[in-house]
Image (tube, rainbow, N blue to C red):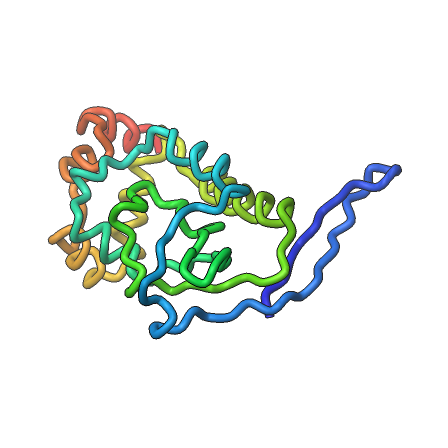
Length: 189
């Protein structure tokens, strides 16, 4: 069961979180055949907003192979509006997501049932805001690079970026930032 959250403020200014459990099911591979995919109309504003942002990391520099490897086990939430129409609600909050290149066969898709329009919109916006509010300040990029090198398993760095240690030069290329800018950050941190 997947929790459906509703958070409202009462007359005293206290937030009340209402959690109901609705059944979500995993879309079987056999049901993925002949499905067309689009973003649910109630999630479209959140989708368009997210993809109108300019992201720090350059997807061309990161590279298609690394992007596909990072995104391979992304979970998407969706509804089946018709037997042959899948409508995404969330999971598209990734800087390189593209409906045109969306691989339905490899995607992990939870099919939501009994969601109202507002619940769909709220779920999409929460997913978008969760990612955006977790983004890193420009002034923290050198610390981020150092922590990636320290904490990320080296085999993943090697798989995604072709190296087991990201240099300032490599990170500068990924973020469209200058090496001197990263070096300045390391002096002040």
